[in-house]
Image (tube, rainbow, N blue to C red):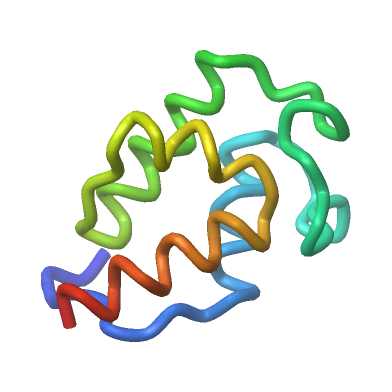
Amino acid sequence: MTSEPIATLDSEELRRVLADVIDVGPEEIGDDTDFVNDLEVDSLLLLELVVVLEKRYRVKFSEQEMRGARTFRHAQELLRGKLTVTA
């Protein structure tokens, strides 16, 4: 992992990172796939997802943001917003 901040967000890389944490194939994560309802991700795994994303992209999420990012599209939009602010 590079020590430089990531200024852009590669959608397929994000999909692979999420899939790796959830332990599914990237093809199982569609734009509107609900992590909880469709992939049966529990609260502990959601927390792990957040920690991985925070470390990987060097951002911080509020508790409210964490609860709202239940689909790939929401996580992607949230990260894009965070990266725009920090870039």
